[in-house]
Length: 506
Image (cartoon, rainbow, N blue to C red; front, top):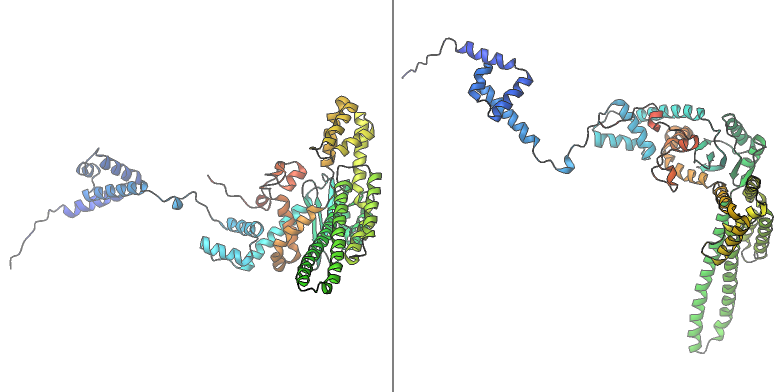
């Protein structure tokens, strides 16, 4: 066997150890500089190794790392995988995410748990923790609700809405849609309403008038607590009930028309076999029935149109003429109760009993017309004529002839009076439909009632008042919350009001 002897220099181990030590002591900035110079060709690997007193292997490694980093930096990234921004997920962020999921997305507790687990790989939460977070937010919301002033509310709408047979007393500012009262109660009598209305008055609520349906407890409670504030009728419910009656009669007329067609077909068939006399009696009765129902449906529809367009419309005649027309319509409906008394009579009685409160908004209009007449030095009857003019079809010749006549009488004051009357009409509410809208929105949160009871209404009241409108039929409301519309002041985001810090992209 031949043994090969290799002579190793005495300073090899010492030199290799020194290279390793020098390389370890290089800072990240120096390593970056080495990579740049060797990649750019400003210095060779051998030169850089001698200059830094490190091994050539180390220089090659730094050069390779920089080369890989550059390749990765310029590697094309699919658009759907490109990082848009980074989100620092903290415990506070998780809490506000939970509240937002429940209130904005109507998510259940289990749904929130699933979202956090699926999208954030976060499993350290249970329904009890979510419940505590929501309860804490509800407590903060209740404190904020109780401190907000209601002195800017001019027109209010009250109603009693029901959730699983539990009455919920609701109050909404008609102009801003701000919900100033929302509570579940055991009763909806005079005492319950009166106590709540007295509490609201202490917070500055003193509207010019309110609008409500025919609820006896509601009206009695307001009369006791606010004897100086009138409560006018809700024209929406009156028009809705008349519309239901019209649709019922028109459906019956359509059904009678179908029966008539069948009997006429039978008559044609019977005549061919010379047996027409067997069908003639039934055909005559069917024709008579069809004629009666069709005529009744048409007449009730006409009366309903008159009630909607001439009596309960904003632009129209004075209170005296409207009352006479209202009574005439009710009398005509009563004359036609014979055929479908069980449907027509309740509607007629309801209208008859609510005439004065349904026309209450007209009294409010006339008060403002009197003030406008005195302010502009224009006779009251001409102001009323301008109001009636705005109820006419602007495409008709009659409208323009009436307008020309009023322009001659009012002269240069015509346009000023016309715009003033138009503004009065637009700012005079006559329906509590906003409360009905509130009721439909609450139905999406019934699941919260199972988790935290009726206290969730407090949180919902806060959320609906502080959440900004993303879209609206009134462009001036977009980007504003009901609270901001009511107060005219900028308010923080509703999550910030609850004590959270909003995430902002840098």
